[in-house]
Image 1: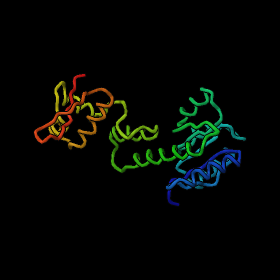
Image 2: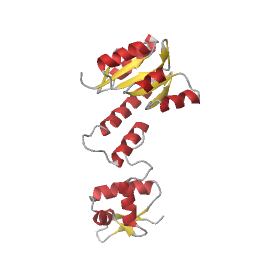
Image 3: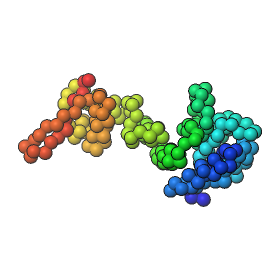
Image 4: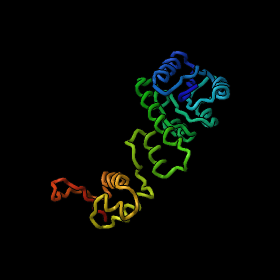
Length: 216
């Protein structure tokens, strides 16, 4: 069965059906038959090995959050509960997202798309860099692809190479031994966060060059 397999766990068959259909409508996803209890969910996980579980909190035979905590499966919690204790408990149990019911199916579709990007970024067979991990976390949060607010090792190297001087992306790339594109990406991200200044300089050809200044 190709695609990201998703198991909905909800004792309301109408709601479960809506969520199952929303999953099935997303390209690259496969909706499994919903489970209505903790027991059914455990059996479905054992039989079908889903990649993602969408669990309600209040189930007839147990707690959906404790179910999430006990499974070695990525999960979202979908619940009408809005008290802070329940939300915190869901995240501490490992939930990647918390959606307050009822919600528009487009909201779930967007979270599924985020999860697909997150999963793809973490599927590399090679060791992950800090930037890889930051991009995956940003993707799941719906942020623009790029390093998180925490400075990566590469960003620290870029800042150190720039110092308090003004330089182009090409000059920084040469100083630290990376491609111009990599230096440009990190310098732009740093500029957007106010850690370096950026200005334009017009050369003899009239084509502007971005210049970056550190030491802020």
